[in-house]
Amino acid sequence: MEKTSATLNRILVPVDFSDCSLDALEYGALVAQRSQASITLLHVLESVSYGLDFTLPRVTKREQVRTELTGRLSKLASALASAGVPSEFAISGGLPADSLLDTARSQLVDLIIMGTHGRRGLSHTLFGSVAESVLRRSSCPVLTVRSPKFRPGHRRVLSSQLIPASH
Amino acid sequence: MPGEGLRILLATDGSHGSSTAEAYACGLARSWGASLTVMSVLEFPPGMDPDYEVNRLYLDGLMKNVTTKLTDLKARAVALGISVQSYVATGIPSEEVSAIARTQEAELIMVGTRGKTGLDTSCWEVRPSESFGWCPAPC
Image (tube, rainbow over all chains, first blue to last red; front, top):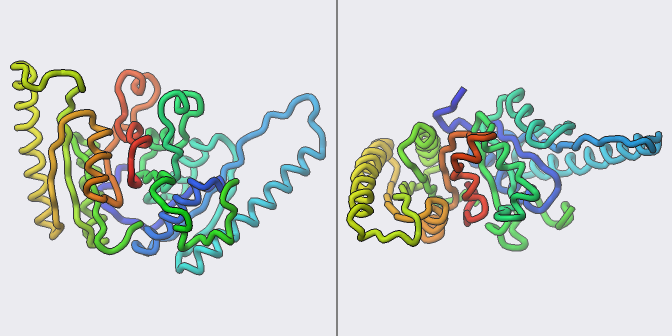
């Protein structure tokens, strides 16, 4: 259903821990503060195709990665809580755009805020854009944030000590 | 960042998608106490002579249509108690929207989308995604 009013109760922010996704989260936190909305953090673990060398250590490694991601998402949720923004987080699998749109639908989010690299030309053709795919298919509004909008040391909600500068 | 003195830029072409964006922009501007800049772009490819008679007729027709729509939109927003400025630009939409966003120091750009996918995307451009590469503000 199409929304025609700006009711913001729940905001979905996909996070891959890249600078641009964290800038989007920073922006999302400020929007949430202003609108008294809650944030759902989502990290998508892209599906892995196992070859003939499929072994148990690889499964163990994947579990380690999931545990590590849970820790990092918890830290982000704590930073948001310190800023007075209620949040929850989830890790899902699959293709990023599909997974994101599924979550947006199932959790009835009012707004998706996501980072974009702002690729153009050949770079865009080669690497595509998750943000663009979400924008085309989402039934709720999508706010995209490009990193160059911000200056270094701009993050107020997510301090630089908490998050490494790049993934 | 959303804060005091916030300015939202709404780019509209008068389509159904942009009327949804209008409702959303007005709602946000009201609840955040933001001012609104509304704009439309008369699409005109670079290299064509705007003074050539046929082009002049085309642009005049577009201008008349857009002015009516922007005036109506402005009246609706003012009725909601929102401070509004309006602009009409000529050129390539994504570039003109970005240029106005820069000069107006807009914190947020709002545009409607028709949500085209697949073959539609190849045949008909989608302006919001085009703007990703240019936008100085979140959109």
